Length: 332
Image (cartoon, rainbow, N blue to C red):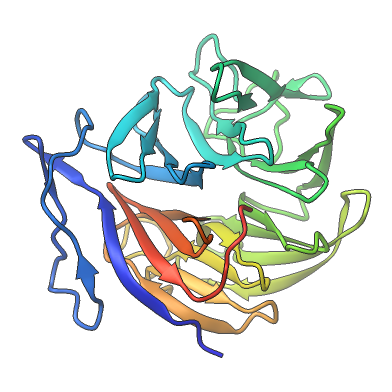
């Protein structure tokens, strides 16, 4: 059955002279929108939003990837404040079952390494869960998810410059509750890993590949996830090529994937506009159930929140969007 998606709300705004702008270019057509002009407590312009996750009280935490980066927080009344700046170039975020905030941090290029951290929101204490694998530094941890046993899975991709101190490979890693770290997927089986999520029954791992070069992997891969946290039996769940691939994703309680994908405008890569920008909702069988159009580039990530876990938050460009869904989400 088709998933009914109700009104798309524009939540976080591009800031001009202290006033919030929630306009919709081109009217929006069949897309109903509710947006109001109001002051927003953010200094400067949010430039590239990513990594949404929702806390116990319903506040949305998300990242801004500009310069040194920052983590922003939008309270349930719509007030946006800076939670952490600089953020060590934090990208993907997720709250664990104890409401601690986990972050993929890309490093500051100086004294703070790329790493996975866990923050106790009450005390502000930051624990480093991973900043090395087998003695080598990570590159740019991108996104992460947590399974039912509390194991953390994250993606890591080399940047343009690779040093001898770093792992030198694209990888998917698992951090166990005892602190041990395993690399469960790497080259040549994967190319450029990005978004990652695990099915509600812990049996399937989904991984987005986002290689921008001609012929590069732009797909969602699905794997069997074993009890021991290893992945096998890869199949192509959905291929976005030659369009822009997905970026981040989440999953609902029925196992449907919500994937942020596509472009509204070309961006100087070999990616075409074949992938229509927005949230692509796939059934566990890979059937496209719904498409939620997003008119602002670049759509990056999604997360469920709200009292009933039926509000989907979407980060794209300078804006945080939300949409109501029929199916209850998960916190993955």
